[in-house]
Image (cartoon, rainbow, N blue to C red):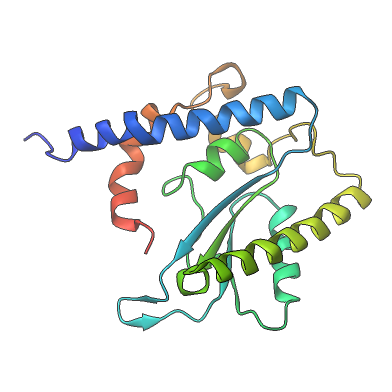
Length: 198
């Protein structure tokens, strides 16, 4: 039986998903070519209540293989006395449920993390500005730490061992093109539909 959802998802991928991720690739390529410091930060929001349960976090960090940027971000956020901070909450990153961090961050060897902000905290311009200012300050402080530790953000790092093993399981991935949105969308769509940002 034909899956009635397949065509709408293909149309959505062609109209939105593919151009969006192609543009991210282009920006990363340009920055690395110019030798500019580059990290990947994926920013989302989540509902204050899900399935009748109030979510206590103001903000959460989401990560998978990166062991450099997420701990620094988590520590900095938890240093803010007025915040309840989730550690891979309300979501966590995985190859099965995510695209941006695994493909644009991990596979490209960039420092990377995700951030989720509770929607009621950014529901107006004042909230948006407060959070933009706070994150700009925190990320600026993290940049100073990374510079002091001589972390080179102008070149991709060697992938974490488990990331390399995962991506090379089907062959030598260094000689294969990065997955395109179209090639990965079919695997992600059913899970993404189930896990859509709630």
